[in-house]
Amino acid sequence: MIRDILHPIFDECIRQYCITSIEFRSLTLGSLPPNIQGVKVHETNEKELIIDPIVRWAGNPNINLVVKFLFLPITLQLLDLQIFAAPRITLKPLVPTFPCFASIAVSLLDKPSVDFGLKLLGGDVMAIPGLYQFIQEQIRTQIANMYLWPQNLVIPILDESLGAIKKPVGILYVKVVKAVQLLKKDLLGASDPYVKLSLSGERLTAKKTSVKMKNLNPEWNEEFRMTVKDPKSQFLKVHVYDWEKIGKHNNLGMQVVPLSLLVPHQKKELTLDLMKNISLNNNKNKYRGKLVLELTFNPFKEDSLNYSGRHLDNSSTTTNNKELGEGHMSRHSIGGLLIVTIPGAENVEGNHHNNPYALVTFRGEEKRTKLMKKTRNPKWNEEFQFVLDEPPLKEKIHIQVMSRRTGFGFRPKETLGHVEISLVDVIHNGRINQKYHLINSKSGFVSVDIRWKVI
Image 1: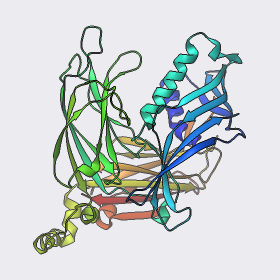
Image 2 (image 1 turned 135 degrees about the vertical axis):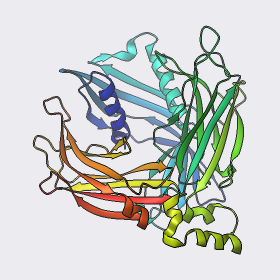
Image 3 (image 1 turned 180 degrees about the horizontal axis):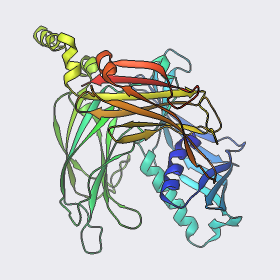
Image 4 (image 1 turned 180 degrees about the vertical axis):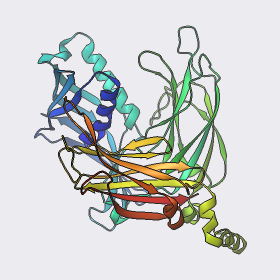
């Protein structure tokens, strides 16, 4: 899981900087287990189990990372790791299939205490005066920013085929209207604010507004769309930052909005008081200004009854049936969500290397799977989503299987085959799921599952 999380981060660093490769030489957490010093269990009315343990871990990991700048390899070694943390572990939803829960959500009730040794090219980096405390605090802050309750890390446990992992059920429309009386962060008494939006339980890239230069009362009026899987438990995470040309962007404030506050198809305007962070103790949070949002949650058609909170009467049912009458015009005339899943490929082979990954291109937007090393039969099982204002009846989606050399050398990338799929059948039938022979490949196939869900 550590490799899967860090792989896209490493790829981004390789693309942005003069780095040839980033690889683990060794990655083991050692033989010493964490010590659980106490456990508190919460009872709720939901199908979940909430556990608050106190965890101490003095481990003996052996983690070596090799970063290559052109021909120069630089080795980083992490050792003597010690952690004290108070996590909140939520097992949900509870299901009748072993191990009896579908996913694990982990968050922190407070900043963790982290101690470790770090060697660079064999020298002890932590011996540099002042650097030890600085790195410790930076790590604690970064971990808290990502996982401090109610933010969490969701780890799927059961396979999607068991029906336990949640699928998208609707689209959240977010309009970032304006902010009022933001903090002054620049030396000249102003800030350059922008807003980042993300949903809990998702690893998708956060949405960002434009930057408003030197403005403590910015107006954006920018709209974003986000796919929702569980409107009863998910929440919208809102961060406001002060943009900096060089260095880290300053935190101006944040807030979270539970989606359970929203009534389907009804616009809700919210004025949020920005906080330094969202924790169980907000007494130290000073006034940081306000942010105005407009939110609308639109469930997909097949999910509308489940989340509307009311039953349709006979007249509205008749109207809906009439709308869906001739040729399912509702499916064809309004927008929705295009979900593209790439389970894997078979018999793909390159001339120089076999480290395949898939590129999915639609309307100029490109998404890609993780890279699988030294295999002709990769298993990706990755899903990509495209929120559309209208059905793509006359469009195609392009899927290309590529291979990339993991070390330095000539011919770093090569094509293993491609396919173009017309989406008209997906719109008419709601879904296609089949294997396609890859063009320009001797015997390669790629498996593709495409679904269309209507708002």
